[in-house]
Image 1 (cartoon, rainbow, N blue to C red):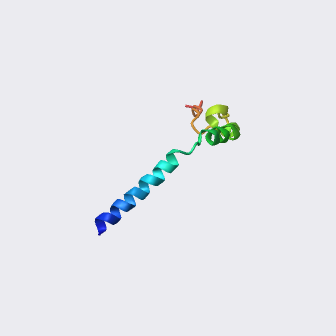
Image 2: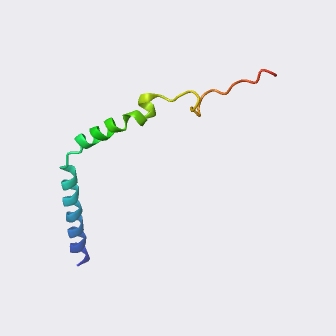
Image 3: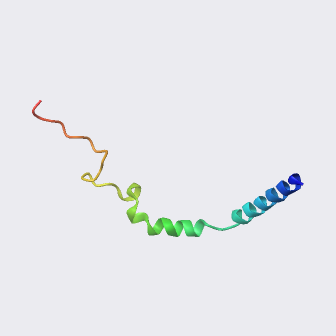
Length: 62
């Protein structure tokens, strides 16, 4: 009996995956990217004053 219930569960998972694979998400993804582009540091860059990876200044007293 557990074998038939696991087959039924697998069939249910496959049906759900097929349903999700058929959804068109490209338009939603494009809209999200365009709405948030101004906050993306890869597109807008990072100012040197807020960049945590900028080279540190060398001490001139040494």
